[in-house]
Length: 375
Image (cartoon, rainbow, N blue to C red; front, side, top):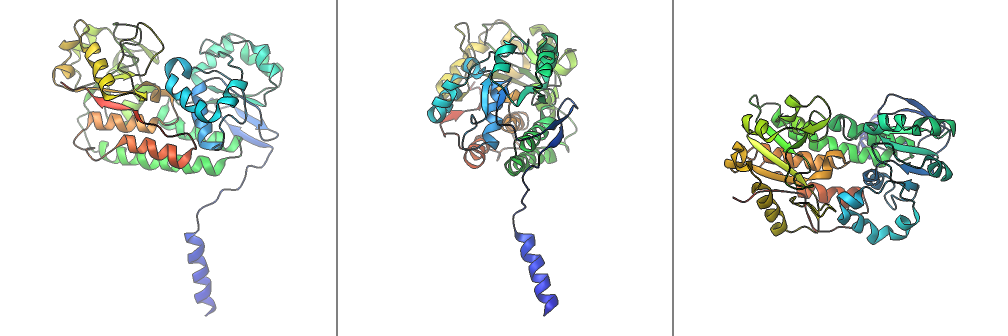
């Protein structure tokens, strides 16, 4: 009987949900730059170099992602005002009270004003490190004993997004919340890669990032970072990786035409730019607006000569997924664009809704995150 009850106890314990203990401080972590940083206590005052990372905090500080933020760069207000409006529905008083430091990738910021907020830590995207060092921000914060912790959702989006969420989970004493999301992320990632890794002939894919955001010019794209990394993770041959020496740059329309892409993908948002002819994506966007955007982009000189456009393989997706903690949704859209038959049952819009409803307390709203151009 003793053995019977002992085995029963083991079986019951095996069924209990896995729990993670709280972070014990001081804690030493290794960030996306390989720095080992020791934090003596839980950070209560945080500065965000990239405002999109408020959506990472939404996975961790779920009741109020702005709770710890004492300064940030609200770059979403230019690239996606609808998301800012959605955040304001619930946390407007918090947002209004937080200084917008205007941080950018060139390191332009009033460092003294940042220091005046008395932050425990500054969270920055790794891609911004050279500019922050070059402008003297890093050295001045070091002198003020304010650590910079680098995360990454751009340079190596698939590898480092999960690691960055887990890193912040440890730093902010939200390890359980972080693991819940990264387990979900890995499950969806594995679902895609288990199918695409069996495909030997990779379709040629060109992503025109921010297509039409500044008028009718073409063709800005990413190499192995950002959208390029996501295309590769989705099992495509990213054309930008063949031409660009850096993370991003312009490939001429003539070069794009000559590569005969199998799939052409534009990224878009409702840019705050009077010259924009982009196809908008995101909250509050209608199918009519998306298709009108596709038509504007297709009317550009020479664009109809691109093989993918001629063959009705033109698609669009929400731009900010390239550098976003919910980039798994963008990855799923890419999979459905590149391999429509293999992923005919996949519904990325449902994945996004599940993230919002299960792992955050962000308000829900109707949105279009990806679409195919109607011929």
